[in-house]
Amino acid sequence: MTDRTILILGHPYDPGTRSVRAELRPGPARPVLVLTPELAAATTWAHRVGTDGQARTALRLPGGRRLTDQDIGCVLNRWDHLPAARLTGASERDREYGALEWQALMASWLAGLAERVVNRPNALAMDAGPRSPRGWLALAVAAGLPVARSVLATTARLVPAGIGGPARPLGPFVPAGASSTGRTPVTFGWAADPTNPDYDDPLSPAGAVEVLVVGGRSLGAPTAGIGDACVDVANRAGCSIVAFRFGGGPGEDAVLQRVCTRPTLAGAGHVSAVADLCRSIAQWGDPR
Amino acid sequence: MILFYGRLDDAPLRRAVEAARESGVEHVLIEQRLLAHHDLVLHADEGGGAGCVVVAGTTVPLGDVRAAYLRPLEVAVDGDVVDQLRARTFHAGLMEWADVTGALVINRPTAMESNSSKPFQAQLIARAGFAVPETLVTSEPDLAAEFRRQHGRVIYKSVSGVRSIVRELDDAVAARLDRVRSVPTMFQAYVPGVDVRVHVVGSRVFATEITSASTDYRYAARDGNEALLAAVELPQEVAAQCVQLSTQLHLPLCGIDLRRRPDGRWICFEVNPMPAYSYYEANTGQPIAQAIVELCAEPRPAPPLTAGR
Image (cartoon, rainbow over all chains, first blue to last red; front, side, top):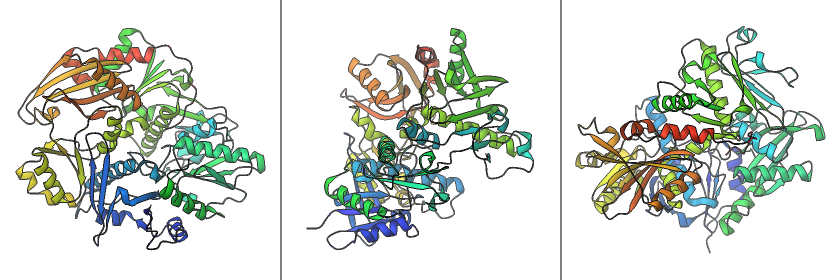
């Protein structure tokens, strides 16, 4: 009997995509397909929503292979960019429009697949979970995780004394001397950004601890309490896979510093846990 | 304290601010065109977090804000690079706060996102019990043509929330259907009937019937047509469904686009999370701005932080 297809929305340059695919050991009885944004753009899409709101989607891949909702057992979302509109000579504005249209289609397609999607995106972006660092912080605080004290301010002079860590000016370009005028926006402490490419270096700086939540269980938690709280945050965020990085101090003094919904999966047991989750969803549905 | 955020040259925001002023409700206005001259501080720590805004030299603790009405438009700031950075940081920070504060927010940025994908939102609308139009999103011209043959009359529009003008797929457009290969396009079966725009404010419902010969009455003037607006009462069960829909979408204020078919059935096209209600208010006299202020001014306890999604 052939299993339903496990679809990885991923990239050839993403080690996580490659290692999960390899771990799934694809074969004739266990189809695994890496759908890159480029392949998605070259695919023929037919996404229907009936008057009762039920979505049905059929894909015809280049080469003729067809995939319907019934063929898909699980979708692992690791996309960091969207398909591009196939427009020659398009303006920047048209390309942006094309990306929004693709995002809107992807969101609706994956919403129709519901709990078969690991880290389901919402309508506006492919990232799962809260849109902002503050959203993650609020969830972490609610779950009882220790978090870095942090401040975001449009001017450094309004930040009270005693905030730990150096002020980081915001923005790609800050004119020389602007900081000293007190007009420059700054942030202290928290650096959570689920899309931050810096996160690709999972265990630096030295001493940082990474907890990975996969399908309702935690890996690498320093204590059971921290592990449970991380699972709680992931559940509240509606995410099956989330990495939490703790640092800023030794042992129990460590605070949550970063969150990532597309972790590199470089830690021990990470890849097999994700592959197990995908297989389980393909067979039984989301275990959360 | 009500916090208003947006531009005073945006009629819906202006009307709400006027209503608050006329009612004597305590409020602060953050004019989006002057962001570089305002300041924002957001704290977060294990005790929760809050912060303040500094507007025209006056500091307003965000913990004092019990309700916020946000009409965020594109941030466009004159001035130097620091002014622009300050404005963008203020805007982004306030949107982050709006997503996590326990205050009533009309509407939270994340709640507004469902409108960024029409077929995605259609799936949510149907869960509230409304029928939605038969929809096809495709990059295959033949499928679009077949959909037209199947339904007779078909309209097309963007899948996302941008460039969202509704047009009928006529023979001239059908001859150019090859273009859908470049980017997937959304087609819907034409629904005959009468347009009804429903504004839900909390649990209050304001319905407006629109009579127009245009496919998209919002652009009737451009088509050389007119749009006639009249306040109407919805059947009780439809009104209740509208409130249920706004509740399910976490939108205390929304504009719901309905069409009443000749057979009496109701179809829901979409839910606008940032409705330009003032246009309907001006044409019907419905007190929508006042209702927004009354909803915001309802007594509620000091807000804790809430989840961010």
